[in-house]
Length: 231
Ligand code: SAM
Image (cartoon, rainbow, N blue to C red; front, side, top):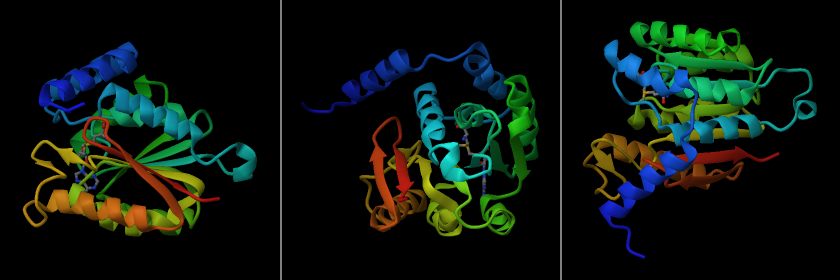
C-alpha cells in the first residue's frame, strides 16, 4: 500500500481521534499557552499517552530500584504538556526533573503542574540541557534515571545522548521526539543541508549502535525513538 500525503494525514488524524483522549486541563493547555505567547510545539495527545505508558513501565518495579524513588528527566519543558503525561506515568512518590531555559515557559509550566496535581513530584530546572545534565550527573550519579524524554534542540541530540547515557538505570528508557522530522526538515533530505536533520540522524545511529541499549524509532507523528537499557 502506497503511503500518500493524504493517507499520512488521515492516519495521524485517526490516531489522534482514537488514542487522543485527554482531560479538560490537557485539552485546553496548549490553547492557553499559545494565548500567553508560547509557541505551539508540544507533542500531540497520542504521543503524550505513549509517554505516560512508557514512563509507567520504565525502570521495572520498586524492588528492582531498591529504596530509591522512580526518577524521570525531561529536556524541553515548554508549557508542561508532555511533563504532565510523564509525571502521571511515573506515578506517586516519583520525581520528574524537567529542564527549560526560558523563564516564561518555566513559569507557565509551574502553574500547570500544580493545577494537574503533580506539582509535588515535578521540579523545573531553569537552564539549558547541556548546562543541567552535568549537574544531574554529579547530583544523581550513574544508573539513577529511569526515564529520559528528549525534546529540546534537535542538533544537540547527540550531545544530550553523550551527557545522559551513563545516568540511565538498567531497564531505564531514553525516549526522544522528532527523530524523523520537524516543521522544516525530514529525515529523507540530504545530509549537510540541515543541522537538525543531521543531529537526529546521528542520534538515531548512536542509539542503534549502542550495545547496552535496544532501540527502535516509531513513525508516529514526527518520529519517536524508544531505547531501553539492558538489565
Ligand atoms: N516537551 C514539550 C511538550 O511536548 O509539551 C515541548 C518542548 S518544545 C518542543 C522545546 C522546548 O525546549 C522549548 O520550551 C524551548 O524553550 C526549550 N529549549 C530551548 N533550548 C533549550 C536547551 N538548550 N535546553 C533545553 N531546553 C531548551
